[in-house]
Amino acid sequence: MIQTTRVSAWRRSFLLAAALLLILSALAACGKKDSSSGAGSDTVIATYKGGQVTEGEFKKYTTFYSMFDPSFTMYMSIPKAKEQYLREYVGYKVLYDRANEEDKKQAETDMDLFMDQYDLALKDENLKKAVEEADLKTEDVKGFYQMIVTIRKYWERNTSDEEMKLEYDNNKPSYNLVSVRHILIGTVDPMTGEEKRKEEEALKIAQEVKAKLDAGGDWTELAKQYSEDDGSKDNGGLYENVNPNQWVEAFKQAALTQPVGQVGEPVLSEYGYHVMKVEKRDDMQYEEISEDTRLQVKNGAINTKMSEFMTNEMSSIIESINLPKAEESATEEGTAAEDAVSSDEAKDDAATDEAAKDNAAESSK
View: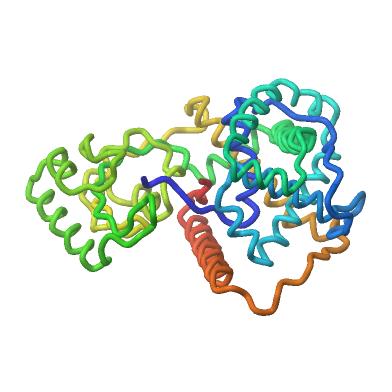
């Protein structure tokens, strides 16, 4: 319930790529040249040093992407976000061309597994219809998959142990495991997003729960009685030995900063108010971390390098972006979506600034 649900700017695409590889156990994979031809529309919407992107090709890519991120359709309705994703796609093509042949060969390792999962996904009639409308062929899907895993391999090969250690030292709190107990007094239904109660009402209940805990109340009993987090209510509200990057930002920051062993003041997240107690926080040196944590650190270092590439290089590589202009009268839904994205980006920027001050990591899920 308290896992991170929002991801900012370009990281959305690259974190999706990383998640895709993790799901398929394809961290060492890569692929051959992207075979999508841009069928459907030959209109050129982007030119860059070394190539161009047509409207049809980009439509295929965004259809492929939406299979792994259902919220993507909302973001694509926002002109700024659509342009950002187009720039990212250009960046992917550029990085693919930089990869060596060894990178590109290894994608065959898990291609069959990926295509089996893709075939299963196509049993969904809505997805099948979207694929047909985009003229997304099997070879296109293979090409996009190969492009993504090739880029992943390229970055892995170009990320040193020194860069990983720097990433760990700069963002140490986010890579050390935390054990937290919490009782959630929800304000929304996590499945539908509908309001369950007002924030004022939730806060009042949360304060009552905190008072009972401060008076010696039993976490197991109170969690069962009050908590609306199905993932922990039957376990005394406990999340044990968890990487805090998995949590939504407000919960994560409380887990990283709240004094160990104390019941803190109720913390408001997008789910409601959390009454929290940090049981323990690890404080390990880089040399002591597990292989799983080392993999997470490498992902963080790669994300940093990808961010630097997108920020420092793409402006000089892209020559023109020619997306069709959005209609002047935006729909109410589109406006609301843009406001939501702007709010998310503002929160992420603020969180990043604060994290830099406190030597804590950015959110990644």
